[in-house]
Length: 111
Image 1 (cartoon, one colour):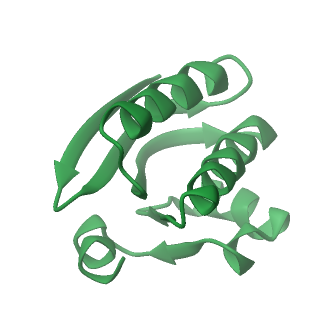
Image 2 (image 1 turned 90 degrees about the horizontal axis):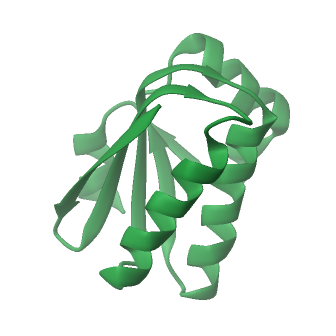
């Protein structure tokens, strides 16, 4: 599991690659929070195109970033989700509070 970052127009794009589960969730959480805090960014796009598996710990990572950014009047969205991972998001009801976009480019234009 690793995370690559891109800063685009005061938005942080986190490209997550690998399995987002209880083994990797804390590391992903820490890396994203560190970049958000260090660069004082309030808009986060999480690109899931490289995520091959996700469990409830992954849901926790996303919800935690949502809460963190909400306190800063910020925004979070998710892009490029594979069908198997999308099913986890749908079952959790997360798409009721966090927007899903087909591409990172689309999300970057909207948020």
